[in-house]
Amino acid sequence: MRWNDNNLDKPKVFDSKDLSEDTQKIMLDKIQERLKEEEDYTEEFKAYEEYKISEKKKRKKILIIVTVIILVLISAVSFFTVRKMSRITNMEYEAQEYIKKEEYDKAAEIYKKLYEETEDAEYIQNYRFVSKNVENKELFKEAENNMKLKDYEGVIEILLTISTNDDKVADKINSQISIASKAWLDEIKGYYDSGNLDKCVSEINKFVNLLPDNISGIDFRNQVVKNDKSDLEKSKKGFIEDKKEIEKLSTKASKKMLEKSRAIVGTQQYITVENANVREKPNRDANVSGLVHKGEKIYIEDTYVEASNNIWCKVIYSENKTQKTGWISFNIISGN
Image (cartoon, rainbow, N blue to C red):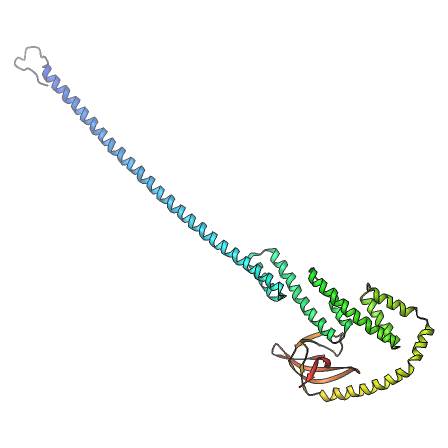
């Protein structure tokens, strides 16, 4: 803006041209200033938008990375879970196969491992069940040995101690008891037919006490009891001569057994049956202290003649690399 200073006394007036230029300049400055502010704001806005886009990309990358990690972890867990389940299934199948083969000790070991890994109560129940079958298998072996020795009472006593929920095992028990009881009853009837009534009465009473539900045994005992004393006496008299002869023969047999028992003391012998119980005393009712197997070598330290048909041998044998002593029947060994 300019003033007209030609005459200072004259009133001052504005030059419209100058005013217009000044106004325009001011307006232009303002516009420029506003544009600059807008430009600065635009730059800040662009920078903020770029920042938002960058942060969004970062978050997206982080989300992708986290998702990938989670998927990897899930896959790893799934892999190990499936692998463990597959291994457990294979172990269960293997245990069942051992049970079918009656290799109960191996099946029991597998169920024990399964319980230790899973702590599933079902496996410990299976372990106890199979372990019981291991014990039952040993009892069956002992009963089989007694059957070979014609100790029918001993066979039945052992079989009656076996407890099981397996129908197959129960059928086997009943079948073997039936065989042993028939053989025992035939032996008792033999005593009756030969006039050995005292032995007959003693054995039939033991038979019925052990098998109170055996109809054949009960009927035969009733038959023996119902016989009149006169009939019994007649039966006894009818066999007096035979008994005397038998006694003579028994004496000779006992003498031979005594000589035989002395002859084998200090000798080495070999077991001829698959398995044989070693007892603490020379008596079949004595506690079992060990087990010897077919082909095993033993040393006879002493003998005891129990009857004309049985010699008990005090033997020295090895068990788990340890020397032990006990009594076994000479019927299950033979010298080489």
